[in-house]
Length: 336
Ligand code: PBG
Image 1 (cartoon, helix red, strand yellow):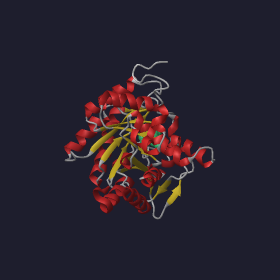
Image 2 (cartoon, rainbow, N blue to C red; image 1 turned 120 degrees about the vertical axis):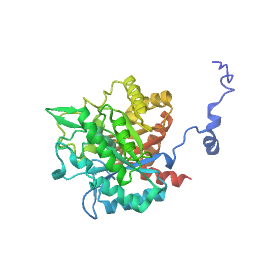
Image 3 (cartoon, rainbow, N blue to C red; image 1 turned 90 degrees about the vertical axis):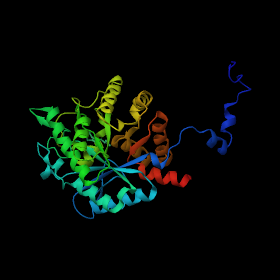
Image 4 (cartoon, rainbow, N blue to C red; image 1 turned 180 degrees about the horizontal axis):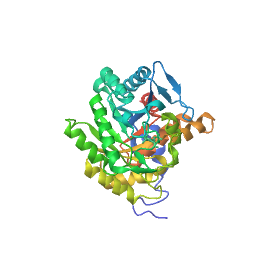
């Protein structure tokens, strides 16, 4: 076979550039850095609590005091941001999810504690969605078995506002209601929070890979039915581009595709089409799969973690939300 560019075999030997480690480093295209990582953390009420989430080996639910120790680790390693997810006592859940916009709710207290201690040494991302606070386990207000879009927008924007007032840097609406980005942007701007950013979960699929997360925040038991009327059908990609276009138009600063590995094609298309800061969420179920295999000795943990995260970068993601963030940062640090 003759290759018009390289002259073909044996003139071209692809293995030459793979011969030495220095050469491989020199020609390597995509790099995973600590700056690419966002670490999701689960927070619970109480003091001195750090309990494992059974379906996510290595992941903890932490009270605010022990959460600060985890954030300290992230700061020390240079991880740019963490994302907070609350696990709320059932007594505080209600059909109107009013705890979501209580300025003294668990998330707001956690944000204030983190910002008081670390200021702008680390970014704080807060999820905007009602599922942790909703007795129905859904991301929006439920009436007669339906998720009511426009009424939910009002609650979501109030939720985003209390998070911003507490000091959160990035609101991340994960609810998939129509029009939420605009509603949140208007609420933030109307209250002087022009600099709070919005990272929208723009293409969020109705996925079975969120199961362990729902265990972790305790929303799975309550959930009636599924989320298919608001999250996307895994069969669709054009729709993901439509969602991203709308969210950007409504004022999103960054967009996200979720889940991650099973949707690398979507990440790639979003990045190629819009050229905006694009994030991937390596979700709980993907993490659980990886850990199940590595803890059984079937896969090599450190290599699989780094290869997985590199794949997101190769697909075009600018950053990755991953429960592996801390161990990945440690591994990247050691490599240097
Ligand atoms: C809630 C939310 C979910 C995740 C992030 N925010 C779950 C869901 O939509 O049911 C999933 C994250 C993960 O699985 O790691 N709106």
